[in-house]
Length: 211
Image 1 (spheres, one colour):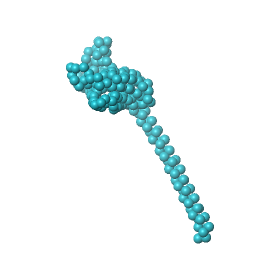
Image 2: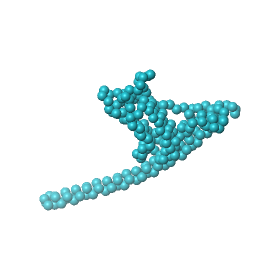
Image 3: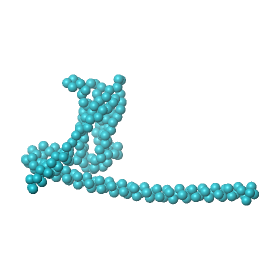
Image 4: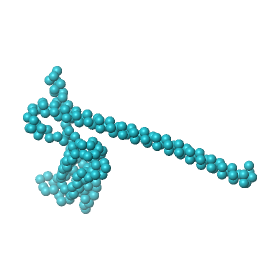
């Protein structure tokens, strides 16, 4: 039973740590942005590079990109101008959507570049091979350490999502309250306008001696 549980934990840990790079195409003169919702005080690392269309030959001079990483509040955390590849690492100082934007300069004739981008946040940024060397732990212990950190990360993420849900709930209550007041105000304005119209019509007909 204990051995089965250990293998189950090991399998779960392996699933939690599967990561994949993103590949996308970017045409010259265009911009493409990718976003990641990251909580405060989280480690995030990114690595990007242009795929050489001519393997074994130098990269074409037209294959350059400008990269900027910004927070939800517009603060810039990384900037690289006209590069073929690069990377960034930062600890977030604010929660929200972080955007990585890639821009390709204009070319005539236009070119299309393929970009590979690997973006990791939280527990997946840890160098586990270095941890194993320093701690002198075996494979089973290493996987359990990975799983423990993953559980801690999920626990923190749940609290983060709960806080975001509370913020959204308070925003919905505030919005509904404002909408209720707007409805009452609109009804009052409509009734006032209707009353003025009736008064104006009554005055007009009295002057014409129709009533």
